[in-house]
Length: 132
Image 1 (tube, one colour):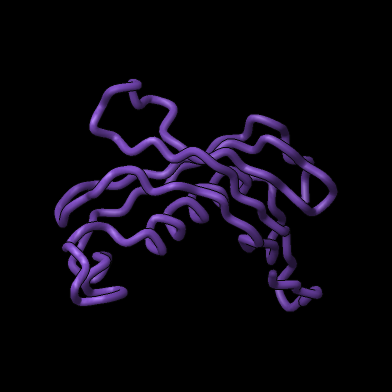
Image 2 (image 1 turned 60 degrees about the vertical axis):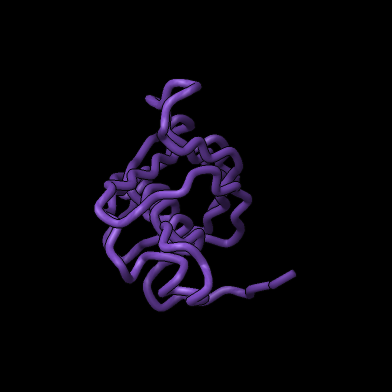
């Protein structure tokens, strides 16, 4: 693995389909809007894309913690894009800031405050995991 610089950025886009909606993914009584767990998947893929260029063959990363708020309802057919920026590197542990750097303060774009924590992993290497 090459050194991952602070400020490394990545993005990931997904066209919202019926299988991404809260009423299909989680509970039928929910409105037909983009599900938060799928939003987290988009953000985790953006975080991976922020560091992909610095990974060696056989290396990847997994999300270990997420702290986000889902602030906008998104219907089928809309393109959702997640962005992530590396804000901390501590050995194999990274912290990313998610969000949309191009979203104006009062736009219809979702603003996603919070952070993502990622652990770098080599293929076949398993580490301890603690859930709390």
